[in-house]
Length: 251
Length: 246
Image (tube, rainbow over all chains, first blue to last red; front, side, top):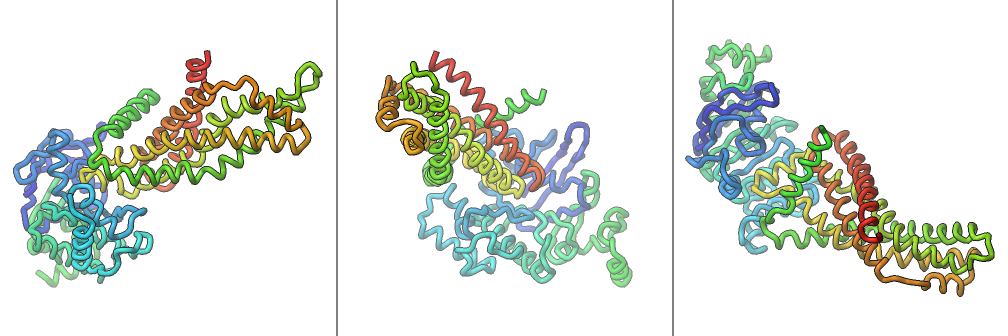
């Protein structure tokens, strides 16, 4: 479980996050949605320690993550996996080397054990036999799968997924969504997905936080989101005429 | 003042670079790889440039000796001194700054804009140390060897060019090249190289590490890395020369 309490973040005089509080539950796929530039990425960067917060607390299963020493912070970071929007694979390494990188850095595993674990994960993300390819030889979907494989290499307790479906075709998107769901269930992770993609939200979200102007202004689940009367949320969810027609039919 | 901000952030970055690494043995293959990239892959270009530099120094010296009072072996002496004291260390490091400095900045800058550095940080790895320390160690270890090679190629090759072009006889050049030789001059040049190697690799890495934006900014960081490396090498050259030769 990840708990945020009163998170505030500003850049100079510009306030980006205002008093953000919420709980992301274990074993669930928790979505943060919202329009571009509303503070989702900044919040995520604060949550994983890439940006300092101005005020507030972040706790991972009760362990404080703000204003702690390097060793304590590292202990929590070793339990975090993240899939970046562009996958952020290391260009100079093969698929196998990318996946084995955290194992090499943080575990005493032998080469044989790492190879075995790599094969298992590649099988799981649907990339068997691709271990010797370089990132430049992979398609967008394959890069995301490899990024996901690297993120779960050390069996993290918390998984952050930033825009998992950006730049992917609808079928590949569904497969990536399915993987996120499956991995969350299998490892009982606390998964946080930052997305604009309403298909993903409807497909796999357990909880949804809607962010606007640096605040969570609505929270619910994939069923309640379609029935909500929140004007900003409706504007976001039912942005297209097609979605508005669906909403009318749904009602 | 932006200059103080830059000095502050450079010092902070170096503090992170030289903090205790996560797993020291992982760094060893990285250092070897960087030594190959920074040193061995520069042997060809450095040798070629220093060879012609030696030749030009010898021929220019020959063309400026009009007086019969100045012996012809001065050509060998001047070529040796110029190559060992200045050209091998300073000019070679300037060449390496252009070739390797821009490469370091663009490599790390590209990793920054494609979130690869964030990925390292989220894993709990000290990205500054992991990415920059092997480059600095490799540069500091390999460049002195490259400079010693440049001394040899510059003096021998330069002499050969001058002899074949008829500017000086073999005996005169050989006598001059050995005249009043001080081993300290080589030591002086190697010491300068160690400082230049540190400056070039760390300044280039600093500009790459703090790249923000996209491909355009990576190019700008790369240019800045080369310009600042060259300026700092020239300033350090002046200070070290004052310190070591006077």
